[in-house]
Length: 95
Image (tube, rainbow, N blue to C red; front, side, top):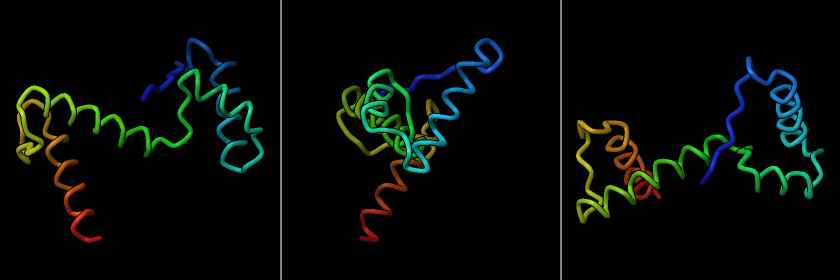
């Protein structure tokens, strides 16, 4: 799950344009074809979704390395991963 990050100071016009695209997306006025092209470039319209996939990728890497998805809650290498995994389990058990 890729994200396209534009530095506002280096590319102020592009950054402003992307902000307008985000607003159009939020209002439902961004044409689907444009949305799809931007997504193909790595533009993320749902930052929460992007964050979820980022943690999922981290969990996959953890599982590949350690053979389990039982990440310690306070894992020193990445404490936020253990917290995220715990939250996912809570959501699952809550239904």
